[in-house]
Image 1 (cartoon, rainbow, N blue to C red):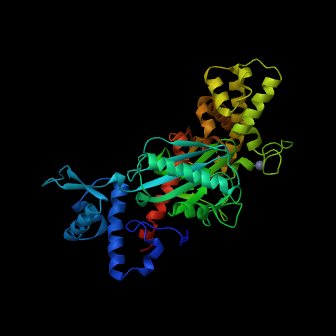
Image 2 (cartoon, rainbow, N blue to C red):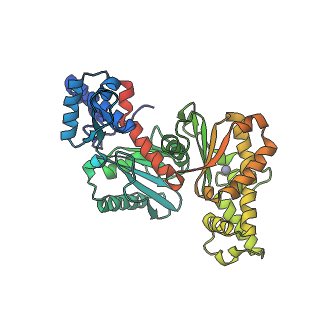
Image 3 (cartoon, protein in one colour):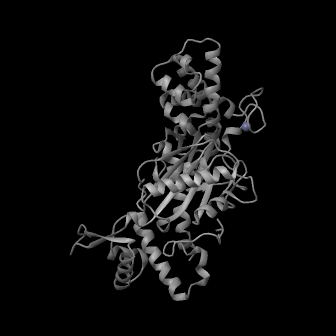
Length: 418
Ligand SMILES: [Zn+2]
């Protein structure tokens, strides 16, 4: 992907010279790349000894030691003590210094935004913060979200210089190359990337929420190390991220994975996309909520009768977990439609794993069982057997961690071209 260099942000001098490589002398560019290569290996592999880094970088032991000493002085690397012997003297180990830099991962959905701050060992600082404000297509929303992130960083005592960058997952049609959303925050000429870069003064990268969820699962979760994975995000709507041949697939215009808008019912309800009978109208969290409200209004016997005012897919899943038959039946109906859609995906992609994520995945077996039953009915057995269907292990953290992975991909991308 071609990097867009933003002129209104300050790049980290040790991690991200992408923005002003041209202004560096040959010697300082070489030194920057050497240090960055060491940081990359420590970030991706954990603790390493000097001889191990020599092997990985093809550099001499004295050169590595000199660079390590510089990185220690800059507080980016720390001495981790004596490691295990692999024959001979036990080596001194080095590791990345976790609090030296931080990345902010943000997941913007319709009614809430999740904010996670991660250190250099990908550990969440504190917990995921939930910013409760309806997504509006206004500068006011951008300002308010920025203020919230500033508050979160201040409470964790993290200053601006320690921030490497910000990753933003956003619901709807997104073009990751331009950093813009066609569905939200498109009130001005500026892309989502630019709007937030102007606020934070740090590099910002964005992509669709379902795709970042898939990236999160691929880098940190249940899809780690797998080459062909579909990650279906079932929240208010339905989105999908695809890892194909080990790469996040974006499609020709960056719109790949609009699984929620495949037609599933001939004379179906009107969808937010303007078409009728989309999968989203019968199998999403919003569809489940609509069905539950209709059932309550029709006087069906259910513990949901007392929850009409605050009905959401979470309320319905809670009722199912308590054994409410209507809630279980309704989740079953959505699972049957979802299974029909997934059967098409299995025939097309022959994936190793399908991960069901988003709010609906909390329904676990109430959702998985009817999906399995439908797959048995509609999918060629041989192909279906090769696919594992699971719910997300990262859960609510998946998209925020995908946003973290997106930033780190960009941080280290110049290593692959130099
Ligand atoms: Zn639709």
